[in-house]
Image 1 (cartoon, rainbow, N blue to C red):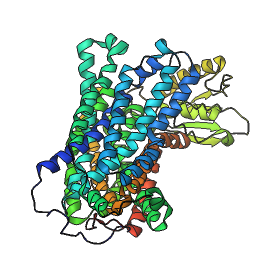
Image 2 (image 1 turned 60 degrees about the vertical axis):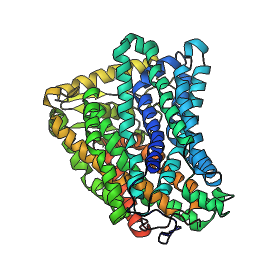
Image 3 (image 1 turned 90 degrees about the vertical axis):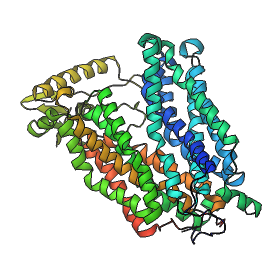
Image 4 (image 1 turned 90 degrees about the horizontal axis):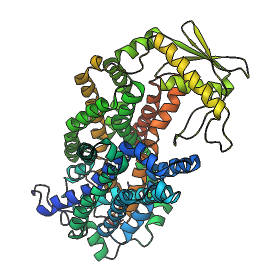
Amino acid sequence: MANSGTADSRNLPKQSAPITAEERKVIFASSLGTVFEWYDFYLYGSLAPIIAKQFFIGEPTTTFIFALLAFAAGFIVRPFGAVVFGRLGDMVGRKYTFLITILIMGASTFIVGLLPGYAAIGIAAPIILVGLRILQGLALGGEYGGAATYVAEHAPQGKRGSFTAWIQTTATLGLFLSLLVILGTRTAIGEEAFNAWGWRVPFLVSVLLLGISVWIRLSMNESPAFAKMKAEGKTSKAPLSEAFGQWKNLKVVILALIGLTMGQAVVWYTGQFYALFFMTQVLKIDGASANIMTALSLALATPFFIFFGILSDKIGRKWIILGGCLIAAVTYFPLFGALTHYGNPQLEAALKNSPVVVYADPASCNFQFNPTGQKKFTSSCDIATSILSNASVNYTKQDAPAGSVAKIKVGDKEITGFNAVLTPDGLNFDKASKDSDAALKKEVAAAVKAAGYPAKADESQINKPMMVLILFILVLYVTMVYGPIAAMLVEMFPTRIRYTSMSLPYHIGNGWFGGLLPTISFALVAFKGDIYYGLWYPIIIALITLVIGALFVGETKDNNIYAAD
């Protein structure tokens, strides 16, 4: 490890000392930034259809550009923000850097609430919105690393896990806060007014979070570890070169990614996001019911972030994180099978009793990786398998002669597909293909309904207590891998390059490996014809992290985080 050795007791507060008012303020102020992140994340997710109507009227090209760049802001640009603000944090200091990140993040969210729509300023509206999203993505790349570093460097020896675990709990608070503001606004002004202008209120309300956070952060001191290093003249003048240009540090960055954050990310996204996606898109459970069950599981499991953070201070962080990866990998298939059993028993019965076969030229069947949701797959095989996957229908594929049009066989009924033609801009099916697509979907829907596949889950048949229990278990795995991760990343790197070094593997792991999980998993489901096949992605990634972490990543809880080198 780049940062080894035991802590110097002359520099660190005693473990037995009670938490001080200053330490509480450090935790609270740092966590507010993460609340901001999740508040905004859920706002965009919940209000995306309304935002699309406000900013992208008329031009499919602008919609396509927005999809690409909004995706980039949400996932791809965060590691670049980690590099930019990580470098600043290691050169200038933790306090001022993550004061800048929250100002950028908060201002971007607030300005969205004021931004005129497409009808008012035309194409400038989506361009400005995308610009704000990119700024926000960059700021988020620096926010988490700054918050985790700042809290850990203030924490007493032996309490870094419990202190930083509070940051990890804020996803639940962000979710509840966003739902509360959206629901409250909708109720107060009515649905029509909310769709017209009331959707802006949740974005504007964020200025309150921003004001409180900035006020508190301005009153705080620089982290003791950075202040000590700066006083000794040991700050890095080139943190990027040191972190990524020297093998002794770069190898720790790579190990932090492959041996920790990569697996942590897929377990996190599977438990909190893919499970919700699975309920609404695969099991066809009503969105409100799925959200309520997810919220309950989050509320029940959130205290375990603190539990595993405290436990990691006592027994170590490594094996809690890797243990979460192992248990998740071993149990995902039975747990998601149980979600189907308790959430949509009609679907479970149909999957067992009504096999579906797709006959297609194998050369025409592609892996439908579509991160922006805008790519159009035109072969008859891809169209057929996508329709079946969206209908939560398992199927097997059998080879057909080269060049033949795909056929779907449901029981005794055989349905012939079609090859689509795109419009000149390459963004949509042409008129004839759209008509063929609508007709095929209608025919397939009727055939699978006759075979026993439900169009939606029967609310009366959902065993909600069991569903919440299963979701709680999935989120419990999240708390195992996520609760101790911030402390461990901080402890892996020397003070002079810590902000830079820890932020990059965190955001590559969570932004790329985690953020792409729903897209990759759906592509796997469509490719294989099995609603559970997408689980192989998080399972394989978690097992890779387990092996690499077990063999090459050392325990960090006793590392001296005051070591500059």
